[in-house]
Length: 395
Image (cartoon, rainbow, N blue to C red; front, side, top):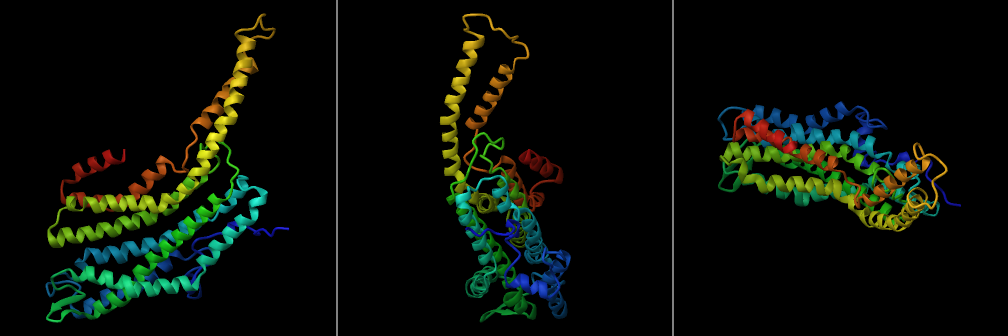
């Protein structure tokens, strides 16, 4: 006899892993990710606050001692005061919106009884990956071996004295704040982002495993995706992560505009790329259902086509080409309503989509990504014109 999960709602992408357990032991999180403001304050205090204190101590927070004081570094402020808090905030939204996805597969009877063991195995596998100590340790190693070097090379490209480093004959000398920035604050930021990408991998893998199961899709389902319409609603959970990506890029572009006198159009390829990337990572996993949905639509057309034809012929024979006048009144006849119902059902089958992605989901994620970048249009045009242009794009 197959052993099933006691409650599929135990599924979560975020309730697990060493960092989550550390937050719980530090009384910064509960079993349901309570105490969100405390976690945000703690992470900001661990990354940004030491930088502020050390730069103030060295006289690098404000003033003209260096070319780029700490509080004038738009990229740093955006990273630690917006990007990092959004990464933390997104956890509770993703947990609340995605935890019911497995139970929806069951409640909508999409999983045949004989496939239930594979379904349970997929949920259990996702939980094991989420809780993996090895995965988070590997991410830390990756951050210090590759990520740190990449980010440092990007920051080192600035050819003026900054709050974190000063050019000299040996290359660049780190300030006290720079040491914390390079070896603590930046790695924490990179780890949090990499941890989210790992969670997205778990999510994509789970959806792929669901797509390998022969789902009981219904071609006449009113959501036009065979009963998988609930998946598109989950994309709203990723909106804070989309905003975080846009905020990171916005801060990076802003620093180039104000420090190097670049212009916003110089970064149009980057802006388009980040929007496409966000749509790909958050909506791309749903494409794994395309083959099953396409098969379900074709099967529905084969099955409902003859049924609709037989009913239409019977209706025509009775009401139009009958040898004798009908014995029942035409007005209010249930045959008329039945024909309309059959027509509606066949229309739903014909309009069934091959991907469980809605136009609203695409617009929501794209708008969330571009919203933090939109204020940069003020560097090119007055506020009124920028508002009209943004309104035109979104509508």
